[in-house]
Length: 155
Image 1 (cartoon, rainbow, N blue to C red):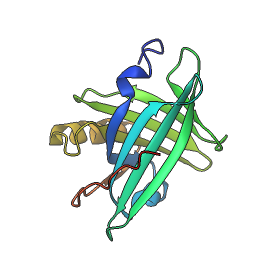
Image 2 (cartoon, helix red, strand yellow):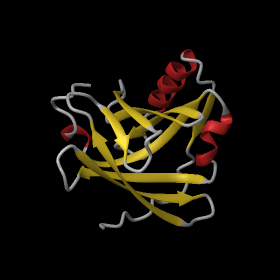
Image 3 (cartoon, rainbow, N blue to C red):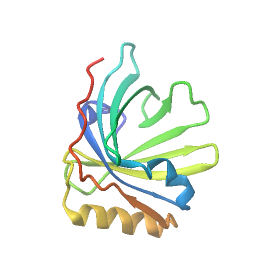
Image 4 (cartoon, rainbow, N blue to C red):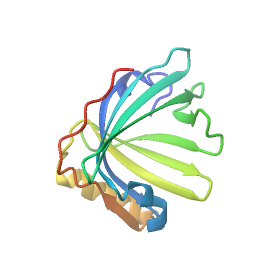
């Protein structure tokens, strides 16, 4: 990804599709999740992105979340406000409308696949799983996406 054009192509709505990690424990935070919808917007200060999400749990609850990413000049590395241990790298995906993130934090690392569509082509998920498996990220989680996504709050 090119730091100069970033973040414009990545603004707007995204769906969390799948995750991969070296161990199942690194993906355990997503076990209760049916689906997650995100909105990425320009933050209130330069070099900031505002991220809002609504998590639909498997038992039907809607859980809102929001956080701020700080951009690094000329890079697609993101730092999460309030989480100095967490690093996020953004990668393009061969899949239309897709992006991959690599999150690294205290005691975990994982790749996450997002798409503009809640139901991207199966081959996209397969390619993500093949790629991450080659990198020795053998644990894999696919969100069920059986329920309707929750409404994203606008604040």
